[in-house]
Image 1 (cartoon, rainbow, N blue to C red):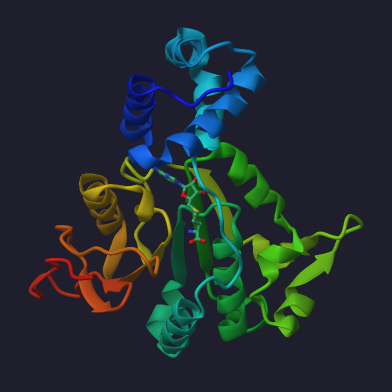
Image 2: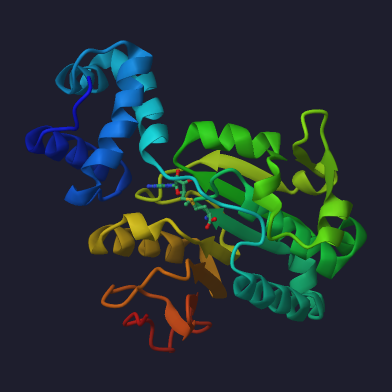
Length: 283
Ligand SMILES: C[S@@+](CC[C@H](N)C(=O)[O-])C[C@H]1O[C@@H](n2cnc3c(N)ncnc32)[C@H](O)[C@@H]1O
């Protein structure tokens, strides 16, 4: 197949992706989507877009559905992405570490749309720096979730190409990574053990104990208003009162009806008490 999707084919794939993952492919991305689907056509030896759609919808298509979703998602990520967010998280962790009751309660953090785990492991690094060896005896739990099973396998392997750590300060690189024989960087397993990965579609509620802090970054750019609203409602259900939510720097929640309160650019909070007026969302 050497042509892009025709408008009608594009619409059918668009609707399937939107229904399953909430991801909205605008019409101008037809070439990008066509290229991604062509790779699956090649991998499955399917001759046409229509045959591939039939395969996805057939009873034997379940495995291919996962591979298809893996191929239409964008997984770009790296350690210490957006320094401002990490400064904010570090300050939050330092304050919490000074509160004996909170310290006893521990630190439960969610890296939603975790991709290859760079964000979840950055959380572990910052908490380790703040709390000290063995996390100062505090219970630390980081959950990384993503739609893509393939990228989660990479996350569990915790091995990275050097460009994933381009924003990582050299002393951090030295302390928390070791070079492998193939010149990749292996993240420290003593820290990796506090991070758990699980497949989860943000369009669905997450069955989990509530979190103290949620990173939901650089995924809502692919969602339209109703999908963003749905994801934020689900996130609200699994956050503790007073918990923070950080979204990607370029992700506007302007005009999205959602329950978090705006604090500063890309940083939101669940009201500590029911009385505080919740977010008629800004920014
Ligand atoms: C660009 S990466 C963001 C990674 C990281 N949060 C960051 O900011 O660097 C976007 C991730 O969102 C995931 N994703 C897309 N749609 C999703 C959905 N409906 N549910 C869960 N994850 C989704 C993709 O698989 C991809 O790994």
